[in-house]
Amino acid sequence: KDADEDDKYEMDDTDVMIRGPVYVGNAEMQDRHGELVAMDAIMSAWNGYSQNPVILYNHSKSHGVIGRMVDVEMGEFAGMDEQVPIGRAIIDGGEKDIVRKIRKGMLKAFSIGFIARAAVKECKDEDTCYMTFTEIDWLETSVVDVPASPNALFNVEKHIIGYEDMGDRIAILFDKIMEDGRSEEPPAGGDME
Image (tube, rainbow, N blue to C red):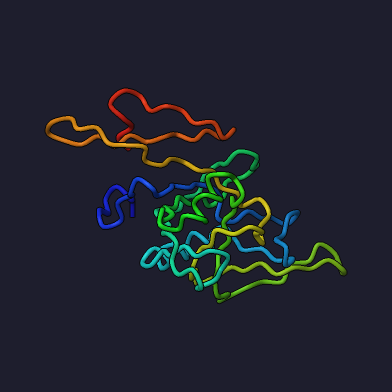
């Protein structure tokens, strides 16, 4: 489901859009728990999770829902040698402290919350084994300060900086945030994504 098709989740001018890997791992790079989630398990679980794609803060319900995952697709991401599941999420601007920390680069990681449904034990040798989850129920995604998957780092994609009345329609002006953190002014007439 694409965010542009779903008008009940329109971005407000204080919201922020973030984009990055929801999970990164392979046999040489397990997560902080010494486990892996198979990439196809994540993509298979997206269909169920997309029905209620909540974003939490640090896997806690104390803040409630702070945003929603808009879409997830396999793709390349800077610094990654293989394709990984890339998520795009809208974070509610009403969560001022969280949004401020995201914009300042203090919070920049995704972490997925899931229930494991199937796994295989994989061993590099007799002493080095780990679990690979091959089927999961994806329950939530969190914006976290310390992710289990250390390379699941996102970038701020854009936020609304204003509106322009164009007569028969309204143009939404976005501030593009580039990977080095600098802002790029939108072209004349706005960025109609």
